[in-house]
Image (cartoon, rainbow, N blue to C red; front, side):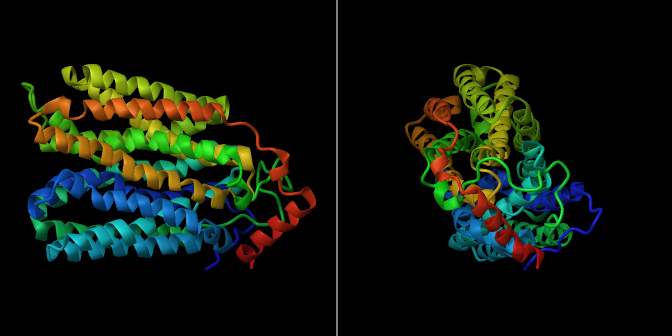
Length: 444
């Protein structure tokens, strides 16, 4: 399916809303922690087991983005958004069946495997298109769209909580909630499918040069550069540190203050998830726009260095002050979101706009790895600490120390990023021919 080419006079500012309709929907993944306690109660699951659908979804996100990146580049954003709609909504419907029949493997299959494919294809669907429309401000452009993925839980968290209160938190109530999610998101994502356009090839976009300028690197060549793998480590470490909190946000804040005089209620924990989503969303547009001003390497120094400091503050003083805990967690999640929104522009700076979507898709395998590591570290350690009779903040102390170490590793990897050697560049005469060939299916 090829998207229609924008007619003369088409405003490029209509493209970010199309991307947002998809990203706000698939961003529901960040509200998975709302479903963890009901699923654990209804199906007798451990914290590690209830994290499995989310973990698999993130794994499939990275894998589908990596293997589907070239198809997205070839077939265009409308095809990609359609595939994302079908897979993401179907995942919820399969999960609804699993909850209704109390077959947990169906929830893992639906939400984790099928829905995860929708996450990956939907996530990368607008990236290269946005960079084409906004070559003058790539960090801001990708930040606007990708902030929707971070902000999805801002809508989904209270919405899901209200549905579980209305329909019940038993298996049948969870099934109805999954069903409503699937149908509603299908309608909302269709808006992006209908609205998206690609720029015309017979005239330059506002702010764009008439031909590709600067170094251009193909997706295959990018994999052979040390820059790609340094960025892979940077993204993996930053994501692992953020997703460890995000996946277990609601039970984490409840556990952290369970032994204090002011424990956290279920509704307050859901509110904490919403706050993290707001920070995640704000970081995506705020920090990525800042990267246009101070540079990509400098902004990642902030994400990784200050992020380690925030984790240290939580580990040392978090259980003595709720405002400190919430503030530090919000800063960490803003860096988490900012890292996602900035990395497409970082890739564009290093590898050019040619096949940047496919390169971005391959880089998201780092997200797949982090999607396993982050929740596994936090849940596995917390479960074993509980078995040892520990409670409260002590459940997470070791996890936070590990996260600090991972952020330091990411900081060092970022320092090794240098401009790509000329031997990896696409030769200039062939570069223009390849670009015209790549865009031909979209304008057919």
